[in-house]
Length: 138
Image (cartoon, rainbow, N blue to C red; front, top):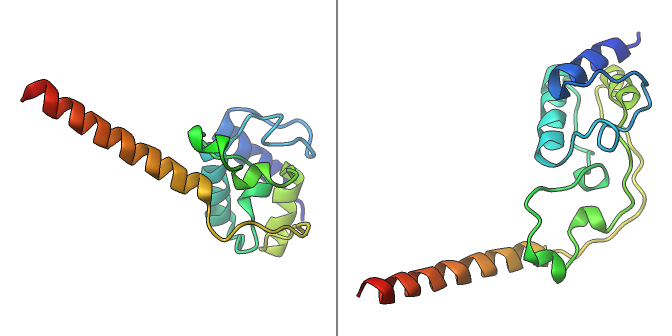
C-alpha cells in the first residue's frame, strides 16, 4: 500500500506546498526548516504512529535562533552532512511504523558548548542591563 498521496496532502496542509515529486527534499525544496521541520516531524509521528526513536534531527534540519555561540563551536547540524527527508521516505516509514535511516558514524562532544556560550552571553547581557538600570534610576 502506498501512502504517497496521503503524505503529499499532509505536507500541503502543513506547508502550503503540494509536492509534485515524491523525492523532493522537504527541507531544501519545500522550505520547511528549523522549528517548522521539528513540528512537522512531531505531527507526522503522532498522526501516522511512526516510532522516531532512531530519528537524528541534526542530519535533516537546522535549529532556529543561531547566535554568537556559533562563532566558537559548530552546532550539531553543521558537523554532519545533511540527509534529505522526502515525501517518499515519510510514506515508506508509515508502512514499517519506524524511522529507518542508516546514519553514518559520527561523534559529538558530550556537552554542547554552543548552548553554554549562549546561556553565558544571555546572563551577561541581563546583568549588564540590571547594572545600567540601577545606575540610570538611582
